[in-house]
Length: 299
Image (cartoon, rainbow, N blue to C red; front, side, top):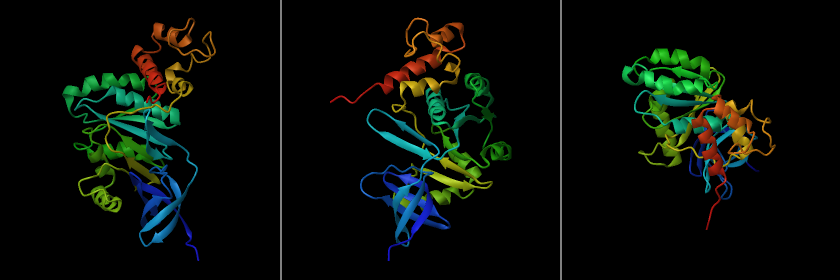
């Protein structure tokens, strides 16, 4: 008699090894064959092969998929995500390139994006950080301020309404306070990390895997490893131009229907650049991403 099909959600991924939550049960999973197009947050059909192991038979259709890519490979971050929280701090310094690319990725994937500014109790860097983030707030991306360690209750009061009934991915560079935030939201997160690390056989010192935690209020938070770069090689030119909200009034207004917004005459995007409605830094990012997406592998 064949094993019954189980339904679960992928809560951790490392390489081609996964952990699925099926009710109160956790199963170590692999895919059939060499393909491993599975992401944390995926809803999957499983066939159990032993008390704690299973094979992934099918991945359900996704609402959203967030991933980064270069010309060589793609790296899934999470599936079925409703919002992305980009965590930065007044210190150490944060990368605006990472923020900008994360916002483009979220907008292109149809995912709400928010920025969290942590460590606002550290006055020396606060004003400068606020000024740097104001340009994103002006584009419609909410910026929220908190201090996870000095005011945990204030942080919880801010975050719980934002997280309720949402699946949220938390991303950011190392040192911004992501681990402190996860430990605040999930009091037994450290224990969960050790258990999942053992299940994924990543070793006691390795916690660089993406993992999902269920929260109250029908919410979930996905913690991703800190990373410095966010490649968007997979975004076409058309997807890129629509991922810059400040370009929206200009799209369709250029003289040429196939305008690339680089140096063409009567380009409405370039007109926006000249009148200040589009910043030079954002247009430069668009040009850089357009250049990257056009790169092919050369042998």
